[in-house]
Length: 242
Image (cartoon, rainbow, N blue to C red; front, side, top):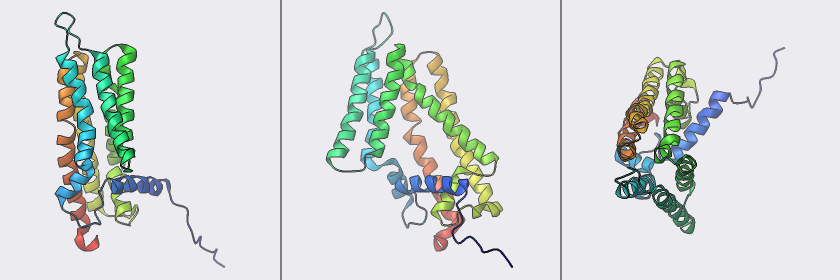
């Protein structure tokens, strides 16, 4: 007599992780199952005008104010003013979302990131240390994505599998595994590229160039890779399947 089958099998760790990644992607507007133009998807992933402003303006204000207040003798800018304005603007964005009763997760994330970065700089008295949290984030994301690709459990694949309703079944398809692995490697390369380009300027204590590079290598590189990822996933599954 055969044993009764479990009517409600427990999800595996990979499935739970895939659901979490897929849920985050869906909230960001990256759902391949939806009929949307690539431009619309990329714009949604960046959060629209408000999201772009929340991502760019605090960092831009920091680097502009710091550069304009550099003392010719010491070579240092006004750290407190630069950080105060940067964190203050991030706080204003968060408050504006609260008042408008809009989702505040992105704004709060930006505020916390600005506050943590400011704390690094304040406690050490070195403006360049404002960029340390960003280095850590890039290193962690890049390493996680690369390892996932090498192990055949691409984080991109886990997210896409959940969004497309097939869980981890994509791993049985060689074409999907190959594409998802290369997408994860591409994202890892982006994070490592940021580290490789920016770290020398951090070591040289060139705050102005470092801040400029962080802005240039932020959304301008993020947006095209989002588009490539979106198009690749849609090509794998096709509009009919979606």
